[in-house]
Amino acid sequence: MCGIVGYVGGDQVSPVLLEALRKLEYRGYDSAGIAVVGEKEKLQVRKIKGRLSNLELLVSQQPVQGTCGIGHTRWATHGEPSDINSHPHTDVSAKIAVVHNGIIENHASLRLWLEKHHVVFRSQTDSEVIAHLVDFHYNGDLLLAVRETVKRLQGSYAIAVICEDFPGMLVVARKDSPLVIGRADSYTMIASDVPPLLCHTREVQYLEDLELALLTKDEVTIYNLEGEVQQREVFHVDWDIEAAEKCGYEHFMLKEIFEQPKALHDTLFSRINEGKIALNPKIQEALSHCDHLLITGCGTAYHAGMVAKYVIEHFAKVRVEVDVASELRYRTPLCKAGDVAILISQSGETADTIASLRLLKSLGVVTIALTNVVGSTISREADLVMYTQAGPEIAVASTKALTTQLMCLYVIALVMTKTEPGLLLEHLMQLPEQAQLLLDKQEDIQRFAARQFNKDKVFFMGRLTDYAISMESALKLKEISYTHSESFAAGELKHGPIALVDQSTLVVAMCTQPALFAKMDSNIKEVKARGATALVITFDTVHDFDTTADEVFRIPTTEPYFSPILTVIVSQLYAYYCSVLKGNDPDKPRNLAKSVTVE
Image 1 (cartoon, one colour):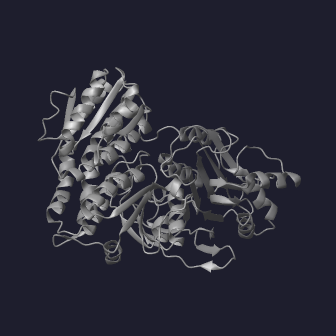
Image 2 (cartoon, one colour):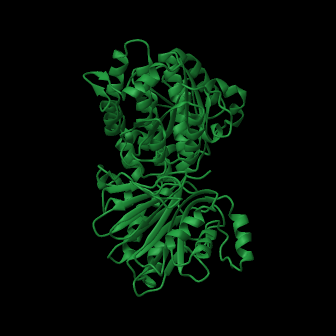
Image 3 (cartoon, helix red, strand yellow):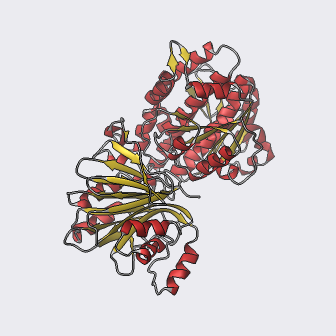
């Protein structure tokens, strides 16, 4: 959600900023801008509504010179998308420029206070108050001005500030919104995420909450709000830049769908030693004594938790509670010291999940972060962390992050089970290869999408884990094809949803629970009797639905409780092809952002 970049060094900065912003397009945005300052030039700002190509054209027509600058892609919260509401924002004298990710909750009162001090606002954004506050506190010390400013801010922020008085300096600060610092020999960079930095450096530092940093081309100094210097570890990013490129695929989403066999293999086999599961001993210890497991996340991560509930309760016989993180953070969870919670976040920066983490820690709950990003906020703040091995996921709609989360949760289920999980582990070890076999048949799904992409309504239904993964399947379709899609437990069909079924409806029935095939067959007949088209997804050895469904798509046979990893790949492909056939960009769905760092 929004993107920040910054650079201070010896090169002309505008090409660096524009290239870095291009690497952050996946986060979602509706306008873009840069601010640049040089030794002989005053502060120069270029910003415009719309895609990054609009900004690139503007900068080509109105070039800017300088070796220090900041850039931003905005996802509107306060004020409509417009040139004037775009970032960067400046103070009244246009000597100070600020970019901001997050939401300033007390912006209204700050705005009234500043207006009493004769400040004239240009935009409707909450972010503009930051620029004017920095100017109010500025007396020649930019770091001090930013420090005094952030002390007055309530809400979330990652900010970067430049001033024409200091053309070789960049000041940044953060609270509840990610900011990464890239270290190199003759320049320093910042970004909201790692990909924009990889063309320049692999050495990064993560700014912690309520910290500031002063950056020059040669050094980085990190401070707390009291002005005390903080020591910070430098992380080496070991994944290749090609992992963040399309590599010949038309879209990142398609590339990431096809990367799932490798990601699943890496996630599982990095945790197998001599044919047995080998987790972090502290995680294994926490799970072995757990009799109440809480799982929380948002969106796709929440759906992974829903699948895990069925799997862990079935195999480990441990009570599992799953909650949406945006709800958990505001209720009173019935947890006690020693309970275990798994907090799932692809980016590790999801605001509601981080808030839930802090709440649970305050109650004495043992927290395990399940994330894809080393050094992310959730990985640093949780008691324990389990990393997926998905590699960078650029497309907004999550694919390989979900399936690697599921693989980790299956491993946890096997660790918690009281019996020898030998056969179950064999099934897990076969899943990467089975995922590849499934992807080899992707043209079958492409042809089906070509026939059905114009359906007005798509309903996904199933029972047990099939129901859990149908929630994710419906989400994927609505995210990128903008088709009205819903999911429901098949047994609930007659409790309301069937009223919506007609000839404009496609019903996708997930059928991988053998004991419930007869009941699913009855549900499929019910929707067909109302004119719906029925697609069944089931195992390649199953023929129970051959005469009932309009079409059957077969997945490799596995343990039924592990089938969501395979069935969801079918749903991902179907959603992708529907999106493309409708002329959408599946990598950048409207109104959505990759990392939701504000409520």
